[in-house]
Length: 322
Image (cartoon, rainbow, N blue to C red; front, side):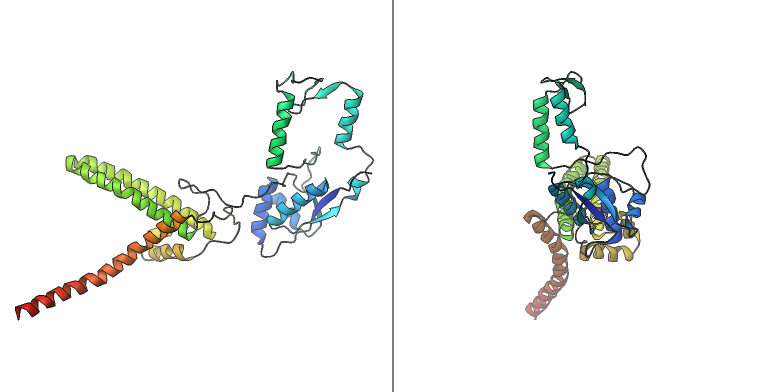
C-alpha cells in the first residue's frame, strides 16, 4: 500500500500579527512570482498550493509558508493517494529492470549504463554524492510538473521548502539590508575613528602643499558622505521607511528633528519589505555606540563646566588682590 500523500491548502487567511502586504511580498519571493498572481490567492477560495507531497515534504512547506505569514493547512491528497498511475520512481525502476540503459542525472542523456556520461562528461557517482551533500544542507522537494498552458488562476509553482534567512546580511558599502539603532551609532563612531588619522595626515600634507591638502580633504569628505548615506538608508529600512527620506536632512530644523527620530524609533519586528531583521549587536558595536553618545554628553558637560571654572578663577584672582 502506497503511503498517504498530502496537499497544502490556502484560503487567504493570515497568521496572527501578519500584515497583508508583507505576506504578499513574502509569497512572491518564495514562489518567485509576480504580485499579480499572488493577489489571486487571496480571493477567499481554497487553493491547493502544492499537491502530491510526502508527510515530511508537507511539513517543510507548512513551516516555510507559515513563517512567511500565510495561514496554510495540510490535507490528505485523495487524488494522489488513490491514483493508479505509477509514480516517477516506480516508472524508473520498471525501465531499469526492462533495459540496460541509464539516464544521466545531470543532462538527461540516455545511454548504456556506465560510470561516466558520454554527453556532459560527469562522473555519475561523484555527481550523485555531491547532490546528496547539498540535499542534507538544504533539503528540497520535487516541483510539480509544468502544464502545457499556464492558467492565470492557477497557483504559482515553486519550491518553497527552503527557509527564509533569519537575519539580513550586513554590508556597510550598500543601500540594501537593515541595521538597528545601536549598530547605526556604532558604525558612525567607527567611521569617525577611521577618518581622524586621515585628517591628521591631511594636516601634515597641508604643510607641504595647500592644493594637495584641499584635494585630499575633498576626497575624504565625499567618502564620508557616501558611507553616511549607506548607513542612513539601512537605518531607515529597519524602521520600514524608504531610503529616499534621508533627503529630509537637507531641510533646515526639520532635518535635525528627523536625525533624532532615526536614533529613537526602533526597527520593525521580524521581516519587513526590506528583508529580515539585522543580526544581534556584538560587544564591539555596543562599545562604539556608547562612545558615540559620550561625545555630545562630554560637549554639554564642558559647555557648562568651563564657564563655571573661568568664573571661579576670576573670583579667586579678585579675592587675592583684595
